[in-house]
Amino acid sequence: MELPLGKCLSGVDHAGSMTQVTAFAPGRVEILGNHTDYNGGVVLSAALQLGITATGRRLEDGEIRLSSSGVCHEGKIQRAAGLKKTGAWIDYPLGVAEMLALSGGEAGGFEACYESTLPAGAGLSSSAALEVATAVLLTRLYPFEISRMDLAKLCRRAENEFVGVNCGLLDQASSVFGKKDHLVYLDCRSESVDAVPFPPHLALLIINSGVKHALTGGEYNERREQCFEAARCMGVPALRDASSAQLEAAEMPELAKRRARHVVGENERVLLAIDALRSGRAEALGPLMSASHRSSVENFENSTPELDLLVSLATAQVGCLGARLTGGGFGGAIVALVEIGAAESVRVAVETSYAAQTTHKATGILCRAEDGALPAED
Ligand code: GLA
Image (cartoon, rainbow, N blue to C red; front, side):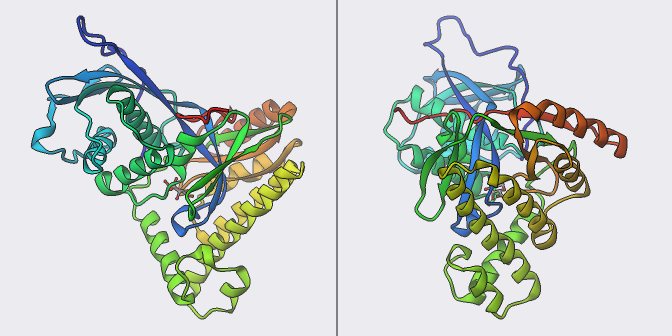
């Protein structure tokens, strides 16, 4: 879900209040491993330079006050009365506060003001950035021990159980574990993360299609169910446990098989990409990303005509090594692997041709792999 966050105008600086603290959590770009996270699989992503900053302070009366763009959420929420879903963006921070309470790490009242630099509707995980920024803010306001992975999982739980979106761990883990000049390699089965160096001569160009992405639609849950059905048909706990050969030999409905083919192929492509990155062949990610997009089109059907057009425009440019849709799909953005010297000309060429061929405006963002909300100390 995308959030109507902008520049925080009012701040929360109240005379006489205790010291303010801030927490920044980045958005993320998924590079390979589409829809693998909730199938126990592997994903390759990067934390972005764009994200959400939460500025806040403790409120000793137990209330929660949340604001963004200078607009306060009307009415103060008394947590004694129990936190209830509102249908608005504040559900993300409220969900984090609630999950924290349920997991025994209850924080008291707090005031938080949010500023976002993430483009709305691009599928770059503003919701996870909002959750992670809130969770980190709360650990600073009410210090308690929580591991980085437990914090990411608490944020996912807020989204699953409070907001009601059945996402996997990718977005929250990328926002927490990002590392400057590295990609995040997440294994969702072992819930472990590794940082893989990303070479300086390559860059990630994100191009927003201008067509909104929203995971509130039923497509995401429908795809999840189809993946689970395919795993059941093969008698494996999750699609992570199936090879392509096993899948092709299995009896199951044709649609479930195509969905599973995407996920099983994505897991394989992530492992090939990790191998390539570790052996100095990072360019090999390009064709893997393009193969991922073809599989989205043919098997998972989570692309759109606009995303397909952006991928074909990008991959036709000199210096673009490959491109694919990023994140849930059904709108949002693509990510292209480009040679850094060609990034600007690829961006301008794609934006210009897209404007000539559609009624939408494409916006390119050259992305750096950045530190997450809680980078490892090394
Ligand atoms: C969305 C979800 C993630 C993941 C991706 C697809 O971003 O929030 O958990 O499933 O889609 O890979």
